[in-house]
Picture 1 (spheres, helix red, strand yellow):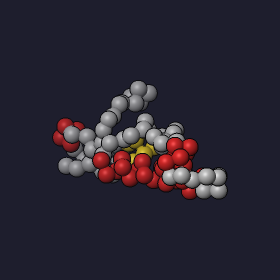
Picture 2 (cartoon, rainbow, N blue to C red):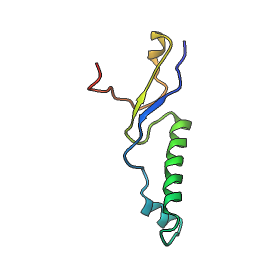
Picture 3 (cartoon, one colour):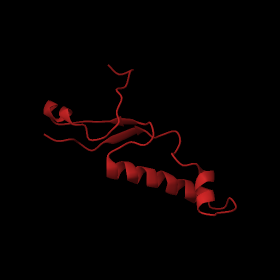
Picture 4 (cartoon, rainbow, N blue to C red):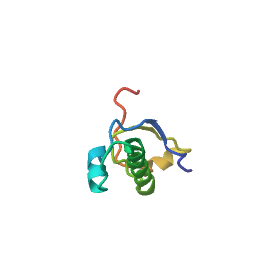
Length: 86
């Protein structure tokens, strides 16, 4: 009885921190590092979600377990069932 690794099916459409906010906080001028900073934002969000087991932004994930008994405690939060899946 255990949970299989959580699979992210659809990544979040945006991040909890915008590029402009991150650049202002880090005192970065110019646009030459925008891609790198955006990647750092996404990596930081993903790591925080992995560490805490809490999804910060809305995304679609696949949860699988080996037994019905595992359903008493989900490995991530918050969750909302997919209304289109039956």
